[in-house]
Length: 205
Image (tube, rainbow, N blue to C red; front, top):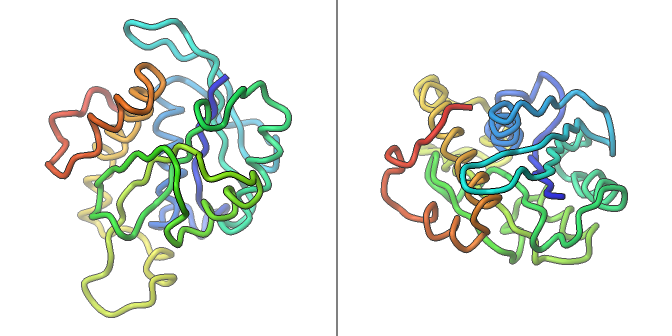
């Protein structure tokens, strides 16, 4: 089984904020594959379905959004991994999250490493006791004016950014599809580039 985890903060107050980009990536991916995130399990919202991609066999895929606050995200992930048939977290799990150090909409897939200051990922690493966890970082950029980073990530995207998000989120879902179909290295080679990625858009959410 494969498990896609989106990181964010629960509740309507945070639903459209920059820090919830991981949730929105997971939701786009789930909607594309008709996976309903309507089950309250593992301390989060969870859905499971069969994902059929061109050129491959249908895969058993779960999608999880932890419903504790960001800095407690690891509890839900650890519980899910203890209950679900995910064989190897370094191969069968991927975490989608926001990244202030990437320009808005830029994607970066990595096989592992540190949390780079992202508290949700840091807690996942702490709870699982390992850092070799694939992750998909979605760039939210930094403010052009002086502002505390915490305040910045808890603000909403600008109207212009919100307008651009559907296409960018769909490209992030494409990256998750590539991870499922072709493996992490192929997905990294395709999506970890600095150029504009509009040509990569394959589907909508």
